[in-house]
Length: 346
Ligand SMILES: [Zn+2]
Image (cartoon, rainbow, N blue to C red; front, side, top):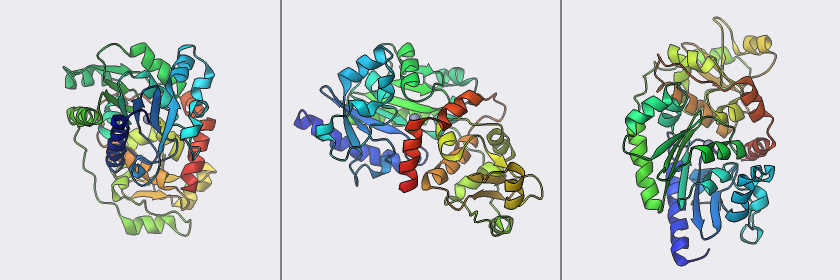
């Protein structure tokens, strides 16, 4: 840490990270990340760690920023493995920097917050996202970045759209980035943008716990931890949107491609027999959601996120879904397999 002022900012960033991480409408599971530039060092959240733990655990890793940015500029695949740029002497736990480290390094501002804000995602999956956001963020320096796989491809997509004065990025099918010179200003900007992008969620009926328990039989499937998760199975429009495919990367990482909806009369065992696999979650129209017994806490958080996002999407909007190739690239990505392993262990 270069100066005492940097140390104070890092402490403030940890406190803000814990607040952001505790709000399921801003970040879910190990998603989202925050960073601070101190001299030539970038302090960034470690891959697989949760922002909500920022005060109780050491989750920030120092990265040598100059060689990382040089690697991005020459499109060196090494930039896609940011652990190679971690400063080992200041990283006693051997944490790996977030997959999204390059996104933070490219932003010139000192403090960068990247969140999977459900209001933003609900807009960022709509084909008319740019028009709608332009209307809402008038007077703010923002840029839209079309979907790219997180990591080096996304960093390159951002580099193409970045221009002086931009301190807000809307990442297509992904989320929100805000940047400022201080933690306090970054937090203010985050809340301002979030309130400008806020959308009303459609309300859904209550889940039917007794019916779900009967549908599970002795399959080991269980009710999700958050009651909010059921809404995606209870609202016909949300269910239609979920069933049609994958809307953003963390969904694919934690829950697999798209969503499985039970057909009329099907129990859990019937769905498994029909598909030949045990999906992490099954949507039962009119009843609610069941999760596989071994589903991780990360999967539970993402199932709730899906309900929160789809409830906010305009029911008349045309949606951009991840393509089959984009789904495959996420599922077969070693950096994500590492994150999943940490998630399963935690
Ligand atoms: Zn992200």
